[in-house]
Image 1 (tube, rainbow over the protein chains, first blue to last red):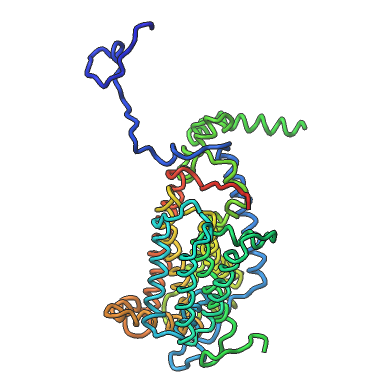
Image 2 (image 1 turned 120 degrees about the vertical axis):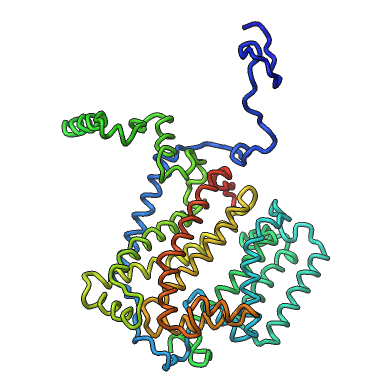
Length: 232
Length: 248
């Protein structure tokens, strides 16, 4: 055993003298090898048990709700009798609300396509992977771009009378400015806002607009897509 | 106490039988080795990692939203298959079948309620899952492509829900699909051909119902199963769930 072995990739026929190299670990290691580990648990039974419990809780909740909440069923489909308003399924009502303001090519085709594309490319835009806060450097230039984009969008929405898009945009836009002007604050909420990076603000803006449009389209739109109060 | 010992003994005897050992070759899952084998020696479980980080199991890390989306898909598959026994994709039989579910089929209303509720819940769960993963930074390397598969699954989920919407063939279904498919015709050049292909004609009628039925019951569920399997498998291949320190 004292003999020193050569581990070069050779072609020697005596495997005891010159062990054959059978694995090369190259630079292309899998992500599994690279990741930091920390304390681990065996999937069986720890994951399986938790998933089973989650499934059972979900099943119970579903069954209880299904006992009391009846699925709607209207009259037989009649192509000659158009309901007013005719509404799409709820998750498309945000889109339908957009169609009310913008030309169909923009609201029905361009915007949804852009949203899907934006979602797909999110992980490949790896600027700011560290999650640096939006106003980390209190850059004036960044402020100018922010306010400029905000103003252009607001004017655009106002021209088309798209108030249900403008309102959430204004709200999120204003919240985003708070940490720039009040950088030192003891309020937990303001500290939270101050630590948010740009992607967080963009996604929050998107969710705020989508949620407002969907809620308005579902509950606040009546005949001829006019504004109605759901409690009247 | 005596009964427990007795049960244990019988269980041990059962484990020694030839039939049992032909099914579970690994033996009882007690050591780390056999616990690992329990996962990767099982066709259904082998897409999961053998070990997971303790942190990734905390409720706050995921709220189990991905699992819940998958469970809802399972519930929808089971209730959907049962509903298929009572359904004819024809005009106007489809609507009569809905009435039969109410007046003729035992627990028919409950079955349909469960399917509809799980469908709505799945749309919500999948959206919520996506937003949660975004805010947790779960899309960051090495999980980029799994995020893209996830966006694909969101599309499939929406399309599954949408095609299912037409099947009861009532006023609600008919006009919702009318509004939706009219949007498609605004797509420049390709809009009308796509709408024609989807509906099997220029109007929403018998052909459209049949196409939506086949999409809803065969094509889209198969697409979903393939994408779900890839989605789970890649979590393992990409090194497990993203774990972040919870300082917020």
